[in-house]
Amino acid sequence: MGLVRTERLELRWAGVGDFAALCEMWTDELVGQYMGDYGPRDEEAVRAWLTGFVDDGTHVQFSLTRRSDGEVVGWLGMGQSEEPVADWSFGYAVRAAHRGQGYMTEALTAGLEYCHDELGVASLWGECFVGNGASARVMTGAGMVEIEPVERSRRFRIPAVS
Image 1 (cartoon, rainbow, N blue to C red):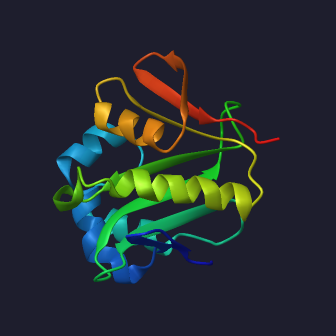
Image 2 (cartoon, rainbow, N blue to C red):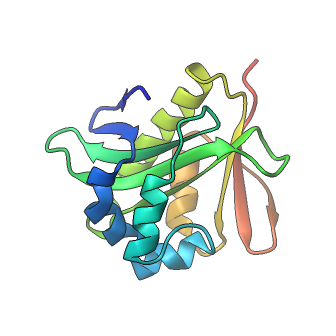
């Protein structure tokens, strides 16, 4: 998997070397609150999740690392959508110490471009709980447009590029 670079970040395939940082992130109560039923919630589940990825072209699992020092600041996963909203969907999370610094907007913008330009994905969508204003700002900051919500979720989409 090729590396995606932004001004401050490198997005690279998540690996077992990222365990400590991603375990801290995934076991964070706030991440659990906003990720619903997605993702691991304890050390054993994080380890299984990290070792279970297969690079088969149907998804990407990025660790977001700061270029200045290599520290993992978060995660961005993108893959084939199970709903007809768009071709691919995504999820993301940021470690507590790195929230509010614009890393996720930067990473999502680059990830969306990578999926379109390098992988040929025509459209992507994401969602967040109604009360998660920070996540909504990340998606609009990455150029996404809000579409019709469902139940407790706001939804955002990047339309097919012609």
